[in-house]
Structure formats: structure tokens, C-alpha cells
Length: 239
Image 1 (cartoon, rainbow, N blue to C red):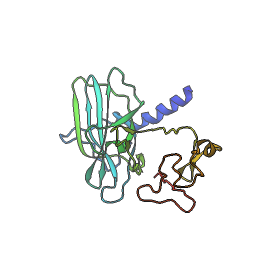
Image 2 (cartoon, rainbow, N blue to C red; image 1 turned 120 degrees about the horizontal axis):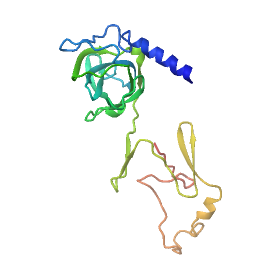
Image 3 (cartoon, helix red, strand yellow; image 1 turned 180 degrees about the horizontal axis):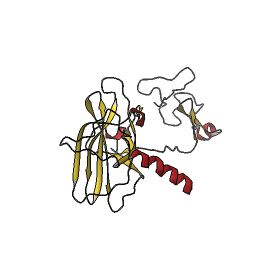
Image 4 (spheres, rainbow, N blue to C red; image 1 turned 30 degrees about the vertical axis):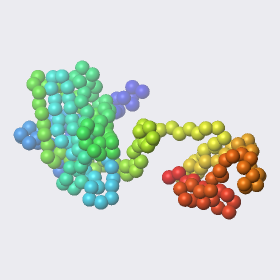
């Protein structure tokens, strides 16, 4: 383990002497003429949304960096061509808890509609926190394309109960009552009754002649206008 730690630190130490993870063509000079220290950002990785059409993400850029005696903060944004998208990520680390070469998760910037689509991690280098605050704002500080992966966003973001108004999102677990057997098949879920459940759940009215009125119940003739097949089955597809 000490050997692996030493090798990882050597790799990130070398990054302090080169532009990585920024592209060779990126401008690391801020809008007011200050150059970003090479040792500030040692590594970065991003996963951004891939969409069909004109809003397809093509690059990620460092928008701003702030370093003060108490903290370090950076903000990145995805671009489609030369136009910024709604996918923005940031992280702020206090000087008291700062660890060089440690992977910090980049969080979606609050207030952006597409903020749940992007993610990333960043490792800061070994640097000294300044005596006075320094802020850097950039226009073309582009990240290397090899550090950016694209993925198609999920089409389903949440499920809302129209009756109660309750909504769930993220990793959601599904459970079914007794007698229902759920299985994953061919990229979809299949629901079936457990063996013997049909007999156990069978109504006492089954087999009685229509019109006898013994059970006092009206049989289901259709669901939303859909009638059963010749065997009396109505298939429900969950998509």
C-alpha cells in the first residue's frame, strides 16, 4: 500500500509541471491578466450529458477559481460548441480540511435546469493558501477531451402519485404484494402470479352462469374501453 500511494503522488506531482488536465490550446490567463498556478488543479474527470441536436456537449471549461486563506473553490461548465449549457459543477473546500491529491466530488450548481445531468471529480495539487483572496475568471480554459465522457441522460427523472402528489426520484425500490412474482427479462420487467395463487384468489362467482346474481357483482367487461381477448385476458404493459 505505501508503494501504491507513492506512485499516485508522483503522477500528480508531475501534473504541477504541465497543463494537464487542461488542453494545450486552453488559455489559463484570467480575464484580468492573472495566470492560474499549475499546482492548483492536478487532475479532473467529468461525465456530461450527450443529447441529439444542437445542444450536444462538446467540451468542459473552467469558468472560475477562487483561493483565499480559508478556502479553495472552482466552477466548471459544459459547452455545446461555443455556447454554454445548463450543466455547471462546482466544489468548495475549506483550508482546514484540505487534502492535496484527494478526489473531491463536483456538485451540480444550484439553479441550473440541467444540473442533475452532469458529474465529476477533481484533485487539487499541493499549494500554499495565499495571504489575500485571489479570484480567476476564464473564457477559454478548456479541459482535455480525454478527461470528459458523455452519457445519455435518463429519460425518467421521477415518479409522481397523481392522487397524493408524492414524488420519488433517484434509486427507487419496487415491491409487490403477495402472490405477485416480478422478474427482469430482456431489459423489461415481467409480472406473474405465484404458483397456486390463481386458485387461492379465485372468486366464488367463477363458473356461475351470468345473470344468476348470486354474488351481486358486475364482471369487468373492459378497462378504459379495452375488452379482453377470447380467453378473457386483458394484458397490462408497464413502460
